[in-house]
Length: 184
Ligand SMILES: *[C@@H]1O[C@H](CO)[C@@H](O)[C@H](O)[C@H]1NC(C)=O
Ligand SMILES: *[C@@H]1O[C@H](CO)[C@@H](O)[C@H](O)[C@H]1NC(C)=O
Ligand SMILES: *[C@@H]1O[C@H](CO)[C@@H](O)[C@H](O)[C@H]1NC(C)=O
Image (tube, rainbow, N blue to C red; front, side, top):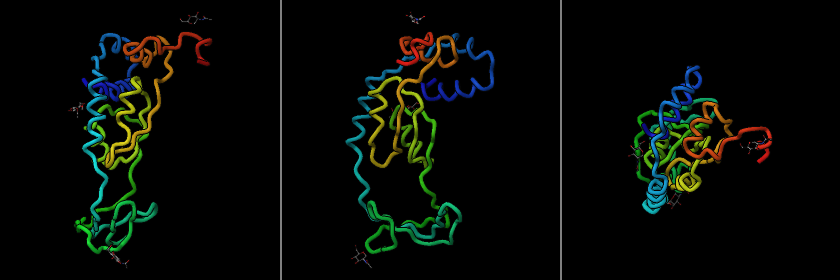
C-alpha cells in the first residue's frame, strides 16, 4: 500500500477502531525511496510551462460565492480574467458551473500524479499536515498548473500513540517521550 493511501487509511481507522495500535504494530510501513521520488518530482518541474493561450469559456455559469449566475462567457488571458474574446481559444462548457479553486486542508501527496489528481478534482491548494522528508515535500512545490502545496514539518507524536507508531517507523527520534522534550 502506498504511503498516501496508508495515511488516509490510518486516519480513518484511528477514529473507528480501538485496536488500531495492535493493527499498526502488526504492519510495517513500506520503505519509500524518498531520494528518487524527490528527483523525479524536481525533474517534472522543467516540463511545465506557464499557461499562455488565451481561453474563452462559453456557456458557463459562474458561482460568485452566493449564487450561480446565468450562462455567460469567461475569458482567461494569463493572469487576467475578463470578457475580451479576441484571439481566444473557445471552449464550450455546456452550462457547467465555474467555481473558485478548492482548498484541501489535509492531504499527503508524494508525487506529480497526486498533484495532477488533486488539480483534476478542482483542488488548487492543499495542506500536507505532516512531512517526514523535507526535500520530498519541497519537491512538490512550485509546479505550474498543478495544485499549490503548503506543508508542515513532522508532527509532534507521543511514544506509543497511534501516530507515534507511524512516526517511529520513519524516524524514532521524532517522538516526544516526556514533558521536558515538548519545548524543543
Ligand atoms: C481585445 O483584445 C484584443 C487583442 O488582445 C485587443 O486588440 C483589443 O483592443 C481588445 N478590446 C478591448 C475592447 O479591450
Ligand atoms: C505516484 O504514486 C502512485 C501510487 O500512489 C503511482 O501510482 C504513480 O505512478 C506515481 N506517479 C509517479 C509520477 O511516479
Ligand atoms: C525524557 O525523555 C528523554 C528520551 O527518552 C530522556 O533522554 C530524558 O532523560 C527524559 N527526561 C525526563 C525528565 O524524564
